[in-house]
Amino acid sequence: MNVAIVGCGLVGHKRAKALQNHRLVAVADVQIERARQLAGQYPGCKAHQDWQEVVCRPDVDLVIVATTHDALVPVSLAAVRCRKHVLVEKPAARHPQELAELTSAAQTGDVLVKVGFNHRFHPAFLKARALFDSSAIGELMYIRGRYGHGGRLGYEKEWRTNPRISGGGEMLDQGMHLVDLARWFAGDFTEVSGYCHTFFWDMPVEDNAFALLKTAGGQVAWLHASWTEWRNLFCFEIFGRDGKFQIDGLGGSYGLERLTFYRMLPAMGPPETTIWEYPGEDISWRAEFEHFVRCIEQGGELLGNLQDARAALEIVFKLYGGIK
Image (cartoon, rainbow, N blue to C red; front, side):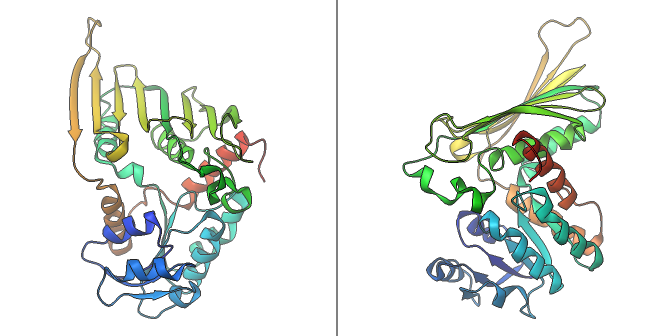
């Protein structure tokens, strides 16, 4: 497939690297030098400053949208209307209502739109999901998730802290991954409560968010997303009646990715423990793109679609005090 990328920051570079045997033919960024830097790494790729020149190019089959949050929907919508498949980074929009027109356009066209929930494609999560589906831990009871980093000098002045551009703070940033993963294992949540607050950074969006989510069946997810973690952390635990999965780390600064399976024994006491470790580079970006291509070519259920993004966004904005 011929691919175009709009947004040439860190995520744009990661997405380009994950294309494998597909061709990157065009990139765009409001900072043209960033576009040229990315394009220069891929022979035949052309750099643009105007994204509108890219999304409707006749030689482009698929557009990856890795922009600031305020541009996610406009760029994706234009690409869909030009009959391009779209992979749009999470959160896919600044608030739930922004997704309505994009969802409608995708449903009426013959193209697919996937949301970039790459955490589902980390090998530890794929392994945990396969074990979960085989009833390895029995009936789900509750989920506990923590995700955070500590920012950097000047963080309070970056675009993520501007609600007009970002739509929200840490809950809409890393918290979206926690909510999506919790929904992937527990299903829809019918009760949402929590607290979002700015403890440290001088900015108009929250730097910490605490969520308590409950399904109609009584399963609970307790989630904490933080921009004051100081040392990068990822930990996601899934508790069943017969055991527990614990996923730690995401590679890189978040530490070695590891899945630990604690299987309760009939006599209870200390559980039987099995550990899988996944050293090396983060392969989730490549695995997610390969999944998207398979769905385009062969059909099948998209893992992380617009409906998933809408459901996660609605949860986030209930925590923010209402749907905006």
